[in-house]
Image 1 (spheres, rainbow, N blue to C red):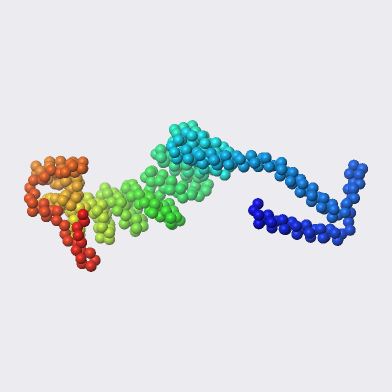
Image 2 (cartoon, rainbow, N blue to C red; image 1 turned 120 degrees about the horizontal axis):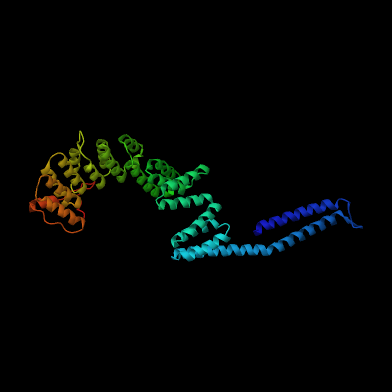
Amino acid sequence: MKLFPALLLALLLALLGGIGWQALRAQDGLLVLHWAGQVITLRAEVAALAWLLVTVALLGLVALLRLPFRAVRRYSRRLARERLGNGLLALQQGRPERAEHLLALAARRASIDRVPALLHAIAAARAAGLPGRVQAHREALAKADPLTAALEQSAAWLEEGRAIEALASLDTVAARTSLPPAGLLLRAEALARLGRADEALPLIARLKAERGAQAATLAGVEARLAEAALSDAQEAGTLLIRWKGLPPALRAQPGVLVAFARRAARLHVEAQAAEALAAALEADWNEAVVAAFGELPPFEGDERLARAEGWLAARSTSPGLLLALARLCRHKGLPGKAEAYFHRAIAQGAGAEAWEGLGELLAAAQDARAAIAFANALRVARGEPPQEFPGRGLRERIGDAAAGEERDAFGHPRLPAA
């Protein structure tokens, strides 16, 4: 007990004792004890004082007798904490066998630290390749803390690719008590791996509303799950419902937009995807999104070429836009224009993808230069310089590499990036 509470208790007892003494002194009473033929007569105040002294003596004797046991327990707790600390240090130093031994001893003797010791003992046993010890520690953890044991086992099953078992374990726990944030994340991951990412998204949205400190991390998880939910859609109607159900901030993510476009191309809803990509590009330019815009197959009423050419004045050096324009011209049956755009895209750094597209264009026209284009695609993919392409004079090459003038908000021209 701390000094100030102990002092208050002592003053209170002294006050009660004084009040009791005054009350007893005002009474003229006797206490008569008859024990084994002996008669003992005591005044009331003397008897009360004697009873108090006997009680204090008995309590002191009990405390004295408990002292060795308390000392042993205190030593045991200190030893368990030392073993816990040494076990964690051994695990961090890459000695899992020693760490598992120390942590197992700590868990055997610890009371407050038993669950953390068992958790780290499981990690050490797994690192040491001791499956028998892992199972033994898990059984002990399940008895000490069923919720923590279920979370640990579910995480292990997810690492092993057993999402069905992990989800079943988490659902069993959720039926008894509410899952903590780590449990909700594990459940969302299990659902995503089972092709049910659309069911996992509300869990992440709930976590974002509750835990502002981890908003950035959760936003990344939410974007990944949104991409998976769109990619898993089996019907066009399902895809559009999931897309429209996403928050606007999530629909603006480049990865989510690309996933929507690719799945839309397979489910033949290219028009909706093209409109969504174009609106996103006009709000915030992104090279991956404009590349996906150009990769969409042609559809009825396709006006992407005109819209993309409208962006060219402000984005004349964008390799993604130039590559998209080349593909769109090819879809429209404009091979000469498509070839020019492919060469400009290559000059602006579009890389192997542009060379491959040029090769496909030339091969469709039975042009012998297609072999050179395909060979250059392989060279660029390997990080090697491309072979000089025939039929492109100095004027054309200069035009391909030319960069349009860009001005800032004050009208001053910007220097080209190094």
